[in-house]
Image (cartoon, rainbow, N blue to C red; front, side, top):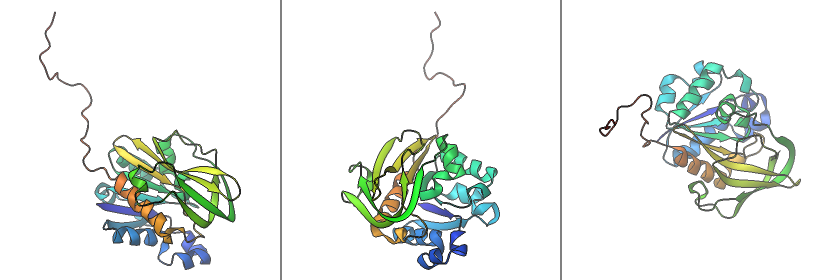
Length: 239
């Protein structure tokens, strides 16, 4: 399976705390454990030509993992549309944390994707809402993170096809933190944890969820549907 990890790679260049936690960038950390899981993984970042998402890269990617935060508007409409079309054509998409506000995710959801938030070093408890789902394989009843950014409802997304995780925060809010969607032939997994100033992507359980999510989102065997004017399979008897 070929996986491309996309990241703005901006916080790592401007925030010393982020660069200390992720010296190889958030994309580098994500790619490292996906590679260990056996995936053929490459990275792409915002400041590369075409944001690193050329036609060749997208066409070869079974799954695209997307992390973004401070530079959503710098992603060109052309690239965002290309990614959207690849998802509709069958590429899997794993959307992490603040990438809920990315052009790609908003285009695929058709909604504003806004929410409430707070950064206060508070505990997060991610409850497994569907213990039968492949994405939760190997995870217990919940994952507890000592410190994370709070995201709270209402989360302006369409009703998910499947709700996989629900978060509770120390300040009292709850959030639909793991949700799946199908668009065209593509599958999408949104997973909330991963604020850049916390070492969330070093957490083995969070890594396991992302590894599972990539595996779930891959969709290499779906037949391409035939549409448009079509000749009958059987003889039509005119009356």
